[in-house]
Structures are given as structure tokens and as C-alpha cells.
Image (cartoon, rainbow, N blue to C red; front, side, top):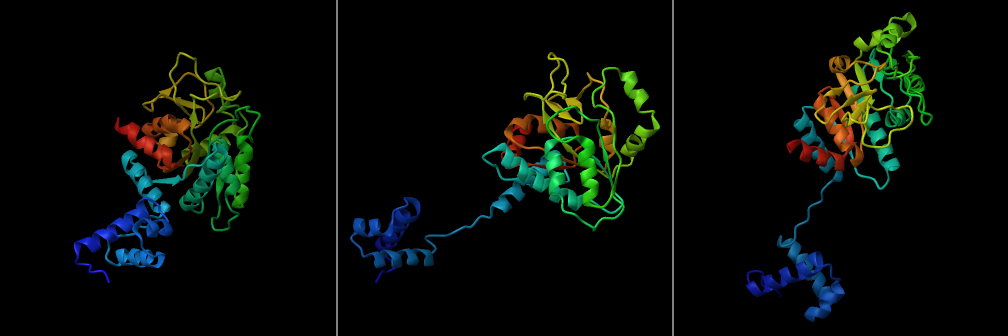
Length: 308
């Protein structure tokens, strides 16, 4: 019988516990090494737990993400930051981000909302994952940028139409290209009654959901970037930002203005992957995002980089 007040017996409990829980040795190995029976080793391990020599902590991964998300929220003055775990492939990560963004958007919506939708493959996946719902009445969805001409991926008008169908709501399309070389043409187009049916709603948005593009990656055809000598880090709805979150005005863009985004009560941004970290940081510094969905690795990098 062990005497738990005896230092040698306590040392035995500690030694067996370290061999089993820290060194990962099997009970059979421990019994052979210490010339004990396997049942004796089992009893001693139980005794170590009873004496609080061994303590167990079960950490919920979701709690880790909640705490990290709260740190990002406080660091950047957001209303909320939701995180997904890191995935092995970007396709898997994008699906997780889209799912989190769909849940976040549902928590933001109210009946009668006018929702602006920015072009983004992740935003489109988010819309696909939205459930059909009758919980929100009189919803209206509008694009907040023109079309891009990118052959892969759906047109922004289709994304908006699909979102409206999920809520049996209404939608307005925008039939103009995103980039137009001549500013006077953009101004003239925005005077057209059919286009103003959409653009006039940009001043009435209750909520907007946007993607964040990283301009340090290969840009698909149709998503033109400013001249090579112009430093850009991020793109949102056709607007480009430098690393400090300042707009780089080098293209005529048929899209919602940054001022209108700033005036929108709720702006949900969704983006992830370490290739997007600098872009996400730049857009957060621009100051119009209220809700962010990203992944935990990006979240840690955002906190580190912003402190630098």
C-alpha cells in the first residue's frame, strides 16, 4: 500500500505519470521498466489522478476561435469577427468561409433590408449556402458593382438574383461593366434611369457583403489592376487600396463609392488564406468593414502585422 505522504511513493506516482502521459509509453512498457504488474501501473495512474498529480484540461477548438475572433474584433474596432479553422486546400477553406459568412449574414438581416452584394467567388458560394427562408419579409438585393467580364464564375447579377430567390425577395440588376476607361462615360451611364434604379439604392443599404481580392496574386482576365508602378495591395468592388487602406484612384470604376460603403450600417467582408492577409489588413485599415469572416491563421497574422 502506498503512503501518499511518503516522498518516495509520491515520486513513483510522478515518474509513472510522466512516462505514460508525457513520454507516451504504454502501460506494458512501464510495468517492465519498473518491475511492476500492468494492473499495478493502472492503479498507480488512477491514484495519480486522484491526488491531482495528473490533471486534464479539455479545450474546445470553437472556444479558441471565439477568443481569437474577439481579439481581432477589439484590435480593429469591428462589431464581430468569425473564424474558420485552417484547411489543407483553398477550395475546402473557401467552402468553410462561405458557410461562416452565410451564418453571419443571416444574423445581420432584418425584414425590409436592402442588401448590397459585391462580386466575389466566395460571396457567390455564400449565397449558394444560404437556406431558403421565410423569416425575412420584403427583402431587396442589389449589386454594388458592375460586371467584370471574367469568364470563370457567375456574373454579379446572377449572384444577386440567386440571393433574392432564397428569401422570396426582390432584386435589381446592374447592366454595366465594372471598368470603363473614360470617367465621363461612367457619369453619363449613372444618369440613365434604368441604371439609377440600382445605384440610387446604394445610399439606402442596410447591409453589404463583399469579398476582398489580393492584388499580389495573378489577376484573372477582366479584373484590371492599376499600372504596374502603382503600389496596390487589395481590391474591393473594383476599388484598389494600398497597404495603409488608402484608395488608389487609377481606374474609372462603375461601383459603389467608398463613402457609401462607409455610410452602410453593416458591411460583412469575407476572405481567407494567407495569400490574402495583407489585402484583408489593408481593407480593415480603410475603416468601412464592420463584420469579418476569415480563418484562424489569417487572424493571428493580422494581429501580429497590425502591431508592427
